[in-house]
Length: 146
Length: 146
DNA sequence: GTATCTGCAAAAGGTTTGCATTTTG
DNA sequence: CAAAATGCAAACCTTTTGCAGATAC
Image (tube, rainbow over all chains, first blue to last red; front, side, top):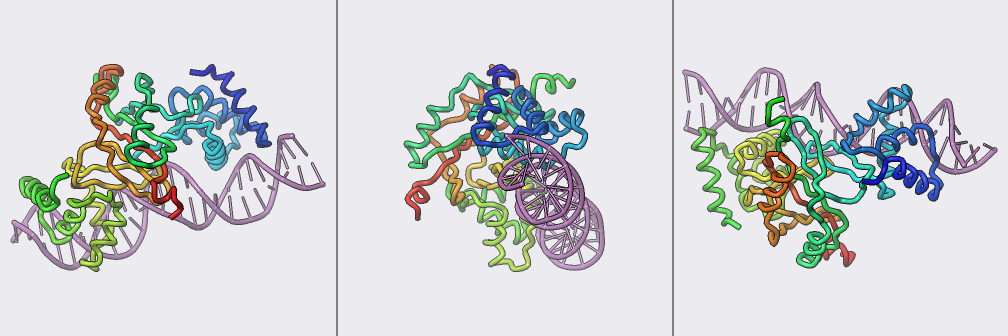
């Protein structure tokens, strides 16, 4: 995991390079995402940043997220219900383990996806751009009925 | 791949066992799903069955799909955009390769997911119930600009 | 005959869009 | 000062829900 403040600087630099503006709202959203080990949803980002910026709108969060995604600086985790969760610290594809009860999401880095990707490309002829591997289950905490 | 007519009989039998009714609408939806190698969406199922049953409603297709899912006789493939595609022939988790241009979906059976599942369970303590592995890319046809 | 299923229309829920206003560089 | 970003509200789209009427067993 990249240090949050380092990661934040990286993304700010990328924004500058492409002449996007560093607004206070963006900066606040960026901060949350740079340290996002909990894979927040847009709603969660909004809720957190709102405390600091009461005038912040959901639309702005959505637009910021879309921008970062387009820049390749944000990993979008599409949930099955149509909503998404985000990882702004490690924006490349990696496996996740998702609790279907409490919706907690953790990384599962023991498995590299590069080989799988290459293999799929060879066997199918597709040019593979992206992949998503999700394990769905019940986390230890929810198993114990906490 | 199970022969479509065999698969159809299997599912009908399961429905009978649980005292669900075999309506003409259900039967028509079931037929499409039993031979679904193209991983149809609800809309596509609806469009196809509508030709035979002009009075069919989307809601009925959704309800049938939900029932089969609950019975474990249908695999739901959650797309990132909130929509879903279905496999009624092989209802257990298996990897897919998805074209982001034409939305064509093919199976990628060279890779077994059972070991991955077990490994994730051991390493994380989660009880793994389900998993989804999707490769996203451009199919050969779309690469050639057809 | 009765519990279940169908089909319509309305509601839901996350996300996107249009546009007037504000702000950044 | 010009171009870009914000914030509001309306629009979108797939899926879900409630309910009256129809139907399988």
